[in-house]
Length: 245
Image (cartoon, rainbow, N blue to C red; front, side, top):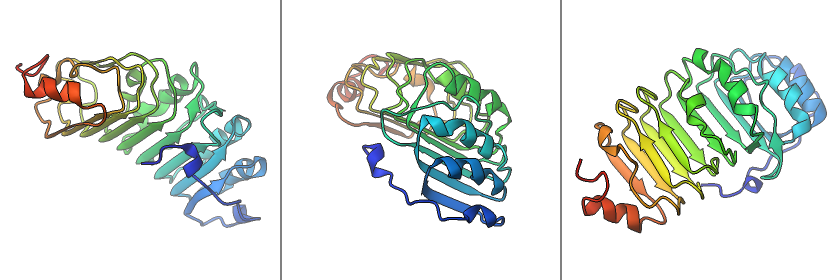
């Protein structure tokens, strides 16, 4: 796994590429002012990955993505871990199957406003949040995705609790939570994530007990704890909290 945004390089956008109206893949190209203003003309894109995105690019970038009605994969990568992306105006095309948002999101607007279009994304099956540094539980917004299969929350949450509400994430099969330094409680309500098969938790040093309600995950096949694994794993082996329910 990439441990830093610096690992996501890119190349300068070729001059005049916006004239290639039938191009379907544009990936790992660095953002610049002209690029984000012009890329919306490429309405036949199916794969779009852009790196080195800065706050000043966000308005034009959101407007461009709204025109990409055939888009299947979207990857937005911030310039670095300190750059704050304002993506509240992002309206995701219904054709999308996978979205990767890599970088710090502004804490007030980006996810709440962007999520207003989530209910219509019936093709979207994979959603990755990385380095977002959110302090508000993002799950109430993400659960609006009706057919999500894979959810990654990686160094994206700085809060202390995550709650999977009753009847949420009905189709989710894989959940990965990585590097949540303050997270000390995960609550799973009854009938949440009934299809979950793989649960992976790592880099959560304050998480001293197994997720409350883990017994409701009756489809679970793989339960993985990375470092530090000792305390939760010991609880599982020894019938600790949640282990004998």
